[in-house]
Figure 1 (tube, rainbow, N blue to C red):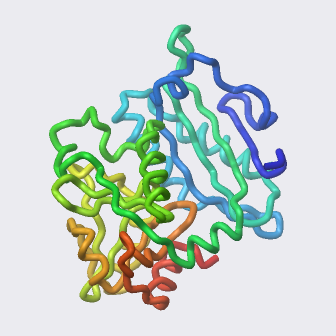
Figure 2 (figure 1 turned 180 degrees about the vertical axis):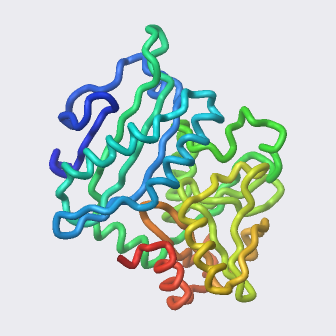
Length: 289
């Protein structure tokens, strides 16, 4: 990727050379995964950029920091850094904006490390995903209520410790699928490695409960379900089994960068796909513009 398609900005410094070092070798975010992040979409058209749901992402950023006992991110400072970065960004199309907040250095008192990246997204790859993905169910290794009495498992926290999520994706690829669906040890469908789950059944939308399940509260899922409720569609949180998806009206992964993506098969079994429902959900999430 050329430097023009990737931008880096650091709290207290602003936009920097994307190839310049910004972390010390003992930064706990890099060595221990001891930190948090947020990702959202930036859309640039005719030189004007729009950041999707920044306030919501900053609110979840602060919640994650509190759960890790990290110093609270300064919302104003992050807003300013995002605005500076976006003002310097001129790549047309869609990009991923990632905010990172670590505990800082392990061996030298430093305070937290904060930086962001802006990375252009491949339009062809996005279009292919949005047309529909194949999914494999991957055991999560925890029961559906395992996180209720174990806050140290960091359920629902967007931490930097994403090794398990990436390993799940590799496991799905080994099974011939494009994405993974985490399944609890008691047999419930939870979420994707980087996406929330939405299922349509009996003319209602069903999403995975958060809290004790450890499922991350998805901002895209929240935006979609709020719009659905406003339009008179019934929405509820409930645990479903993977076998329920092929007998539904459709299932989707929802994320802040890819949007609302239809699941067309699960473990080789076709999942119904209604293009009209997909268009409605995509519009509700704001990914039709």
